[in-house]
Amino acid sequence: MSHTERPPESEQNQDDRAREPIFLLPGVVTVLGGLILAVHAASAFVFNAETRLLFTVWFGFIPLRALSVDGLPGGVLPLLWTPFTHALLHASWEHLLLNLAWFAIFATPVARRYGSVRTVVIFFVSAAVGALAFAATTLPELQILVGASGGVAGLTGAATRFMFQPVLFIRDPETGEPRVAGRRLASFGELMANPKSRYFTLIWVVLNAAVPLLPAVTGADVNIAWQAHLGGFFAGLLLAGLLERRG
Image (cartoon, rainbow, N blue to C red; front, top):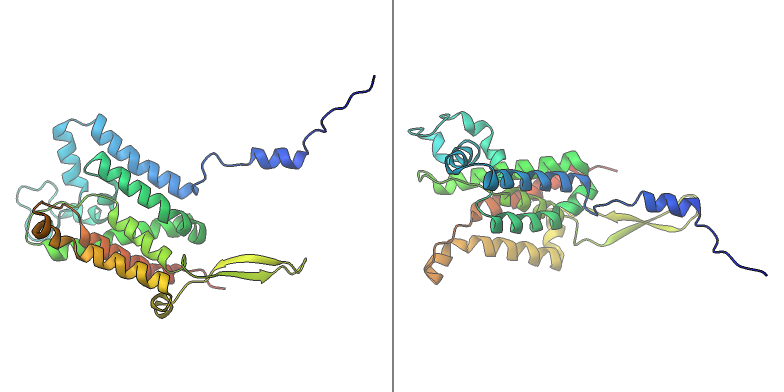
C-alpha cells in the first residue's frame, strides 16, 4: 500500500521563523518604553506618598529652581538632570498610556531610520528643549513638569520630516530589479510645500498653541504642557536634519 508524506519544511523557512521577533517594535522603542512604564509602576506600587513626592521633586523639572531654591531639596543641582529625567515620570496611568501609545507610533519610524542612539538623542534633547520652553512661559510660578510629551513631540517632529515624502527606489546592481530605498528627508521648504506634511504641522502647532484658551472656553483647568509639546516638536524637526545619515 502506498502512502504520501508532507515534505519537510526547508531549513531556510525554519530559520526564518526562528528569527521572527517577539515584539514588532524596534528594540530601542521597547526598551525605552519599558523603562518609562517601569518608573511609573514603581512610583504607583512601591513608593509611599512621601517617597513619591520626593521622587517627583528630585526628578521632575521645576523651573523655579533657577530663581529660588527655598524649600526645594537639592537646590539648583537637579537642574543638571531634570530637563531630561522629567520625561520618565508621569502624573497618572492615563497620562502614561497616552504618551506610550503616541511614543510607539512615532518612535518606531524614527528608530528604523536613525537607529537606537540617534533615537534616544532626539527623545531626550527634545524633552530638554520642551522643558526650556515650559520654563520660559511659567516662571516665576512654582510648577513641576513631568511626562514624556516633549520627547515624544520631538520624535513626531523628526518623523514629519520624512514620513509624508514619496518612497524612493534604486535599481539592484546585481539583479537590475527596483528596490525600495526609503523616503528622502524633506527640507523645511519641502515640508511646507507638501500638502500632507504642511497640514499635519499646522494642525499640530495650532492645536497646542490653542491649549491656553481652553480654560476660558470650557471653564475647566487644563493641565497640558503645551509649551513642552511645541518646543519638543520644533527641536525634533531640526534634529532630524542634523542627525541624518548622508549618502
